[in-house]
Image 1 (cartoon, helix red, strand yellow):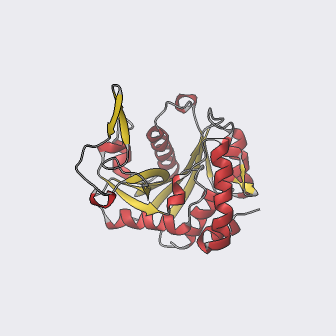
Image 2 (cartoon, one colour):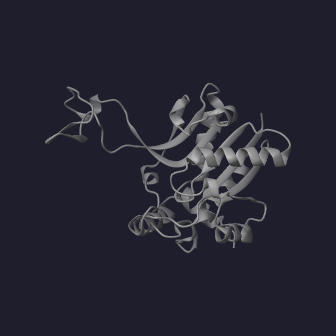
Image 3 (cartoon, helix red, strand yellow):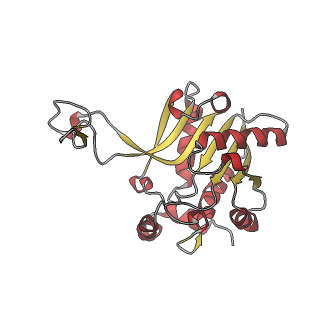
Length: 253
């Protein structure tokens, strides 16, 4: 039970923010932040056999990664997995299948790190992986941030010609409402068999647990506004939080 596959997945182009996966973030290629954080995690786990794979249909992204991280296995993405309507689960399954064929044996876990979430520390990855190891009954752990709004208290939905609380309640304070979290899509850790056997690309078929990150982790890069805002936040984090700066300082090149 010591084989881990880590994937970095990215499409060519983007409707919301053109070529976002190729952007430079705070002076370094955006994708290098995920690779650096993964490298720090791997260094702390000599007991694991870890392979890292890049699944993409962008030759430019592949060349960017391989220029500094030649150990990463490049998995060219087929046209059938292109476009923004393909569930990401299908890309994970494609990566796992091809890497297991290459290795000649199965992995025990599959972890994915999102390219557009550079504000992720090695400890964030550690926490997510540890949570999955501690809960063998769970099919999946994903990263979240504590939500700033609560559907039982201060979120509304449109109903005909007015709005109502998303979840009807008699709560008079947010502290009375159930805890809720924003899924930030930064880290996913799958039980191998759940991923292999999923047939519809819907995560919620499994039993899921969470790993909580700092609330700045809710921001990912889907627009130029996100990009500029995240760079400003990153400058603050790098100056005041060594664990974030450690990822930047560990980037190769």
